[in-house]
Length: 375
Image (tube, rainbow, N blue to C red; front, top):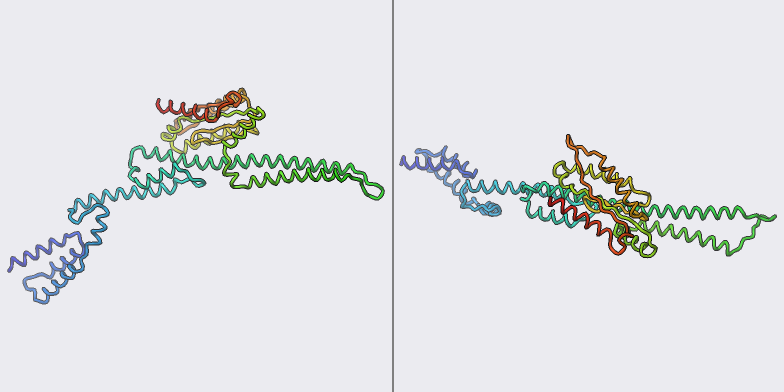
């Protein structure tokens, strides 16, 4: 009988180290109350508590939750902990991937390339732990900035071009009004204060004035049109220039400037340094543009100068001036001097009248990029 109580005591002490709090707590109470002098009531009450625990003890929900993490109820404790630690690490990747995805979408437009990256990151958050993920992420962040900048630039170019046209129409309208006022001032009233005026002359003047007002109104409506603004692009502008060249032989030139080592700058010196270089790079190119030139961002590393009416010699001079200015500017990061490697491809329409000169320039830049990446 004594050995039996020792056996029960050992069982209750063992159960006190259970991982289940309910079992652990009840075993502790049992160890305190169990003794050789226990009466039948005490034994009954303890037995009742253990039977209630058995009846109410439901592991189904816990087992179902555990199976989601690849844990079986037959796994030992060490195995369960290891599996949970692995899942915890993966969950931390999921958390950070969700945060990254929130900030990757461009704020102004949609981009399929970025959407594909976000989808892959959402489905495979563990790629965050891969060695090259940081560089890949920086490249997509730079791409996101570029997409927004291109959208802003497109709209700025649209409004700039159309505001110029509105201004020109206003100047014509003002000149027409001045001529009409001069005409009125030349009229000499008779003794009755009346003047003789041809109805046809008056009709013509009002017609000319009405045409100018209509042109101005049409241009304003065009500028306000969201559809026209969204359709505006450098390709559309170049199509118009090609049409003018084919009809009237009006030449134009393009110069495509590209920073071929932008990935190296981004990876070694960071996004901040790369953005600083691009801001300065853009300003140098913009300052070199004449009144009718336009500056377009083509991709995350390249800018295009469109110069209506410029010859090959003139665009060559513009390119050389820009290259000299860029070479003389020093980009400093801590103690390092950052040297952006600029490649330029330029061409005028008259030199290659039968081809798409923008496509030709992009091919030339792509060839240089390929050579640089292989070196």
